[in-house]
Structure formats: C-alpha cells, structure tokens
Length: 159
Image (cartoon, rainbow, N blue to C red; front, side, top):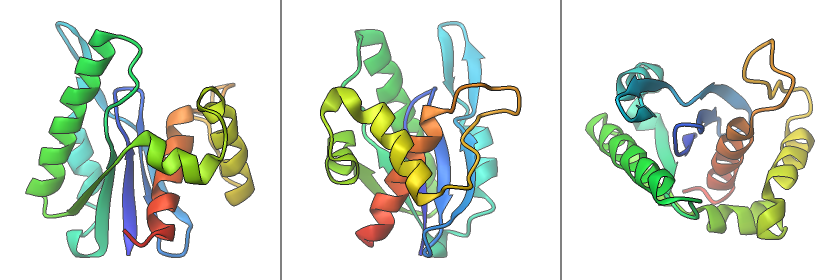
C-alpha cells in the first residue's frame, strides 16, 4: 500500500510514500490565480494522481484547523472540499487526519515547535532527500516536510 499524503492548503504539498517508507514523489500544491487570490488547482492535482492507480493507494488529507485568520480558514476549508471530492471521484480510499493527531505522535514537541521538529525528523528519516521546492530556493519547503510525515504516519498505522 502506498499513501498519497496531502498537506492541505495553497502553501501545502502532496507526497507519495511507498509501503517501504521511501518517498516516491512529491510536489508543491498546484495553485491557480483567482479574483480573490490563489486556490488549489484540482486539474493539476488530478494529473499528478493519474500516475497512482487507486487500487494501490490511500489518500490521507490533513483537515483544516488552527488557521491564523478567517480568510485562511475559509481557504483551507475550500481546499479540503475540492481535494476530498477529487479523491473520491477518482476512486481512492480516503482518510482525513487532524494536524494534532499526526504531529503529537511523530514530532513529540510543543505546538509552536512543529516546523523545526518536522524538518529534523525528515532529515533523520530521509537523510539524502532534497527538501527544496526549486533549485534556486535557499530555504527548505515546510509543505514537503509535513506531507511526507503525514504519509509516514499513515504507513506506520496502516491506515
């Protein structure tokens, strides 16, 4: 069983974690411009998912929660709805997970320390992996860390 793990939101990411624990693929969340800002581009997400036969995969999508503003909460809820519907329409087994659930077990840290803890754990689990969004980036992409750890949590629990 492979897991398609999704760090929800326009600054999130998608990752495929294989049953062995290896990262098969990952991409930043595809987005498109709208009159109100950015939103998840479900057509681009569908193209990414087409390479993943549904009978061998489970989609694990992080639920919205802990947004810093009403606008961010609305954006996350919209993204969740679009990604949830797309997953079901494509025939994937679908599981929702809260950030608190996977972070509590995987990161074992205080809520304000999750970003550095996620980065450290990713480096421990996948030491040779590239965590930059593009070759020109100088800062690792948090979305990759979270998506991969959501997938690893799912794999460990055989969701």
